[in-house]
Image (cartoon, rainbow over all chains, first blue to last red; front, side):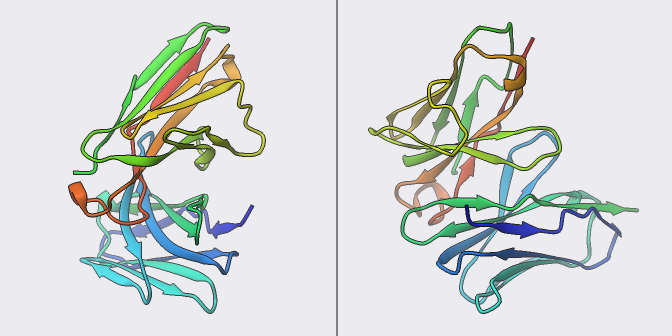
Length: 110
Length: 122
């Protein structure tokens, strides 16, 4: 199976900090990329899609680097409510086959 | 928009019984649904891909006779855990892939997850 790798963390940061996560993927044929967030004992929720050169949504910025085969998630001005596990998802082209990373745990403290 | 429900949200059963979990896309149609399992402090593990009107595709190591999947309509897929044992206790989550992105606020190639079913087998 194709691999999607994430640093499991935890990343322990104070409120207001900027934190960045990386996710690397091994399948160069991958075509679509997503960041999900999962709270403890809950289902994953879509945070943002990452297409072409990346995108921004408020305090969150996602970037895609096809040459190096990684995507990143930047969170600015961290809030306590950002504490969660962030999952990287990569889809292969053609037949839709999602591959999840193991997730990166973020803890934002006062 | 893009709501996926699961029923039941939790179930406790005796060893040897079968448990059926339903996954419904409420405001969009889904040709493809996925079933995942997640053990505590571990990542999501894809069990199978369910396509409407055809047999499910199981991931390596997942017993198709133990985890029966039926995708009878564009809005409903079911997972039946047959003869459940304590080692089957886990958090089972489904997701749905919209057939027509854009409707109900859905996006292309994006999975929408149900709230999960917590199964405890005694």
